[in-house]
Image (cartoon, rainbow, N blue to C red):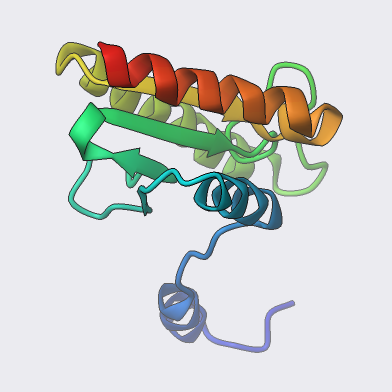
Length: 138
């Protein structure tokens, strides 16, 4: 049971600002050290991409297996199932919208699953670097 009222809990949660996950921070630190210059969580771009290089019309999203319902690793919570299913479903709909938005605008978009970074960080980083390099020439 929550000790706060619904309104107070809502206010508290609104005050929480998004920060990069540990995996996101590892990726951006690596890319920065390699000399790639980009912006993180760009508010004026659709979907606030984790990494964006406007010069190359390039956006990268690092999707959590839970919040974006990874087909390999998502496990629905046992409690409050309907709430979580609705929330995660909306996330997926937003992901589809954002992906289609960038494709329609002829931007380069890359989505990486959290598990890709966890399973083989080096190969996934090489995938990101290849994506950036290929986007430069397009």
